[in-house]
Image 1 (tube, rainbow, N blue to C red):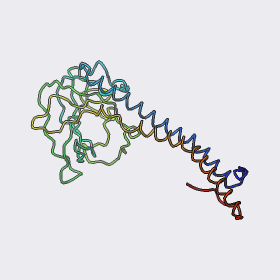
Image 2 (image 1 turned 120 degrees about the horizontal axis):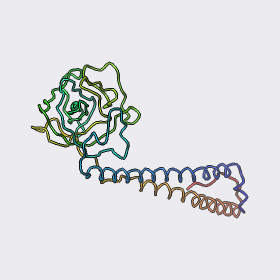
Image 3 (image 1 turned 120 degrees about the vertical axis):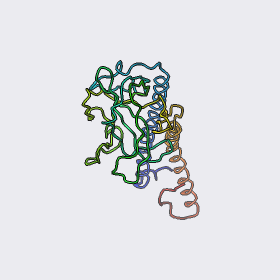
Length: 262
């Protein structure tokens, strides 16, 4: 009665179904792991943002690679801005997704070491190769607070590090590529959180989202439901094929044909 499942068409259909099941299960676990990563990241952001700020020199040093556990850590730094060696970071968006620049200003600490401070976003001017209008950093000694971030790389950010850029413009924020005449540069950089710039410019970078968990868990459940539906669908097709063959045999019609489809 079910000998037709041994025909070439049904064997191929069965093999495809058997291949789809583990593939869909694997895709479900991939989405599940992405969900777990997002939950862990939200927890890390929440913990580090709410932690009591500590001096940046207690967490990082020249050449130091900021570990993931210290991402977004609240830190403080006291020094004087070195506006002569300030640069802008190209192709950055503001809180409304407008494209412009981030302003990266070195802060020279009392011991001569340098902390890179991302003071925020400014719009571009009419000429993309010209240095954009950037509000001056506060003069004299200042104490700033910020979120500690790791050095950017093309692999980690997806941003191509282009060559031949205009003077004082960069694509990535990377302390290992920033040469300061004042002294060695601390690893990573600070996203400024205070004090707020006078006049609201540069526009401070928004706090990272740590409430949304995204749709990954829903996608994982969908893939697993699809995987469960494959054998169910295969059984339904087999039974329909058997029924259709029995009806064809009763009517005196040829029974052999392609597998039925839903």
